[in-house]
Image 1 (cartoon, rainbow, N blue to C red):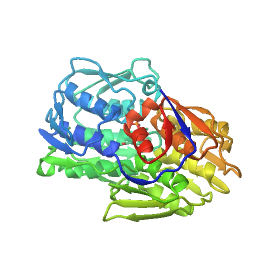
Image 2 (cartoon, rainbow, N blue to C red):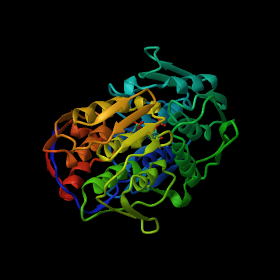
Image 3 (tube, helix red, strand yellow):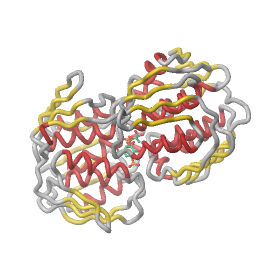
Image 4 (cartoon, rainbow, N blue to C red):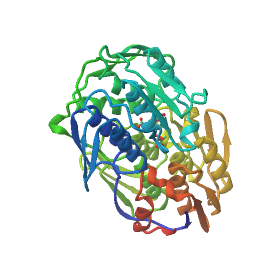
Length: 427
Ligand SMILES: O=C(O)C1=C[C@@H](OP(=O)(O)O)[C@@H](O)[C@H](O)C1
Ligand SMILES: C=C(OP(=O)(O)O)C(=O)O
């Protein structure tokens, strides 16, 4: 499905969707527990993949309007009856691959074309170091994967610059092992705030895990036991980034985003990035509300080492801002649903922006004139679709964004919200 977005303004109030990262972790933590209620979950294509995995391991997930009632598999998983399809979700595949290594038998994991091209090798190698079995069927470090245990814990050494999700996976599974898992990082850790989210969720489920001088450690023999039997998911700052960008570019009378409370999410840095670019933006942290009004923006330099998912949003802001925006430390953004560095360079160039792509840097020279509406490929990637749709609001004429159904991965109501805020959108 495509969307035609014609240059238009937006305004009003919009509620942030729930966090994808917290929802994945809460569902799996509830699976490792005897069970738990997950309140205000994100129900999306990716989090449904994690629900399916918990069920494959012997748990059960009952969906209600504002909560998930999860019956856990309680410690080590059952060996699944069938292959686990992680669809498009890297988080699901990484987190539940480590779960598979706790099982007394083999689990087969697969996903869609995109997921089967993403790197899993460092996690397979870590499971191997724990004396588990972990193989890529094609021998290329990519899914389909065959994984089995039962591992008892130990020490692993792993690179930190490919995906932080390997660390999250090992910490979550490590609590269930007998001996715990000690993780030594071979490189600097990228996407580090995502491990902070993990530590926060683990604490909510009564699990001790912490950082060390070398990396991280989690003691074995622990039981997941959620505080009060439930966990509440906060709003998603990666999703909020599109709403704030819309406001800063196209809301002359202001746009309010509610449900934006502080948490461990690194992507809250979008607030700082917009302020540095000169956006008229205030965040009332206690009320969980961010107000933003259309502003003249100026280019800035931003490192996305900690915040890879912000790259598409910042690239669009940079294309509209005066002067140059340099997005640095972005190599790991190439390992997502698509190579997002290349995708944004190509699409913004097609819209008339001047963009230079290097391996670890994306430089955007803000346009003297408006972007031009044209047809752009969403690359079957939710973040490319959403960021280009925001660009469409300020491009001359009409922008056609292809493959808009992929927003289902993290923000299923994105186009409904865009329309409700007054944008000229035809699907
Ligand atoms: O753990 C998580 O919830 C995520 C970690 C990040 O991935 P990497 O750690 O692979 O960079 C991020 O890009 C992804 O959208 C969600
Ligand atoms: C990269 C993402 O997610 P995942 O790694 O779970 O596919 C994302 O949501 O941008």
